Length: 55
Image (cartoon, rainbow, N blue to C red):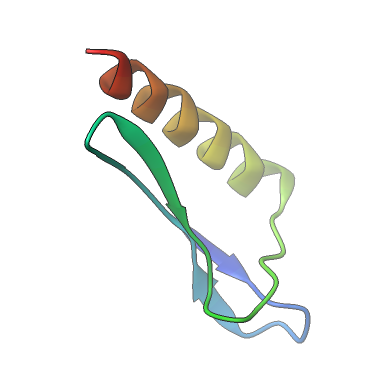
């Protein structure tokens, strides 16, 4: 999902499942700034990944 850093550069946060574990990849060495809409997307992605990891 798209996000920004503290100086408004475009960045991305990725969520995936590997070996029944949820992996969250943030911008390397950076901070991700999320809008409320992006936070909703992250929440949904984490919930979906958690369900997939439980299978």
